Image 1 (cartoon, rainbow, N blue to C red):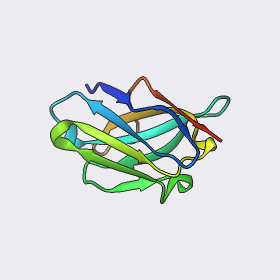
Image 2 (cartoon, rainbow, N blue to C red; image 1 turned 60 degrees about the vertical axis):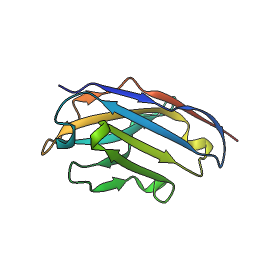
Image 3 (tube, rainbow, N blue to C red; image 1 turned 45 degrees about the vertical axis):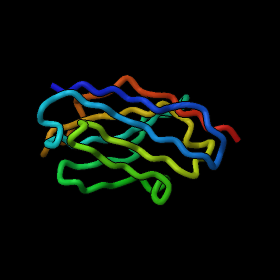
Length: 118
């Protein structure tokens, strides 16, 4: 069982930066892949970025070069550094976790709002 808590959302002007944090409970955090997803009003939830337990990271095309996912296994925390933010990045951002080798994301945080003004 993994519990996730996001923080770091807020209101920022276009071109600005925010860093989201996802703090996880559990003693085997390093064995989990952690992903960031977002859901804008009226839209489906979409994948943003993920960090595998191996450290490999991958991103959706729309955030490549602007967002960076990183993890600190000693702190059981994953970060999403978001730079050059655009109004279309406005959404509720969620982190999720899945155990190594799983295809599903069974564990989710409550979400944090990111609003980018133009």
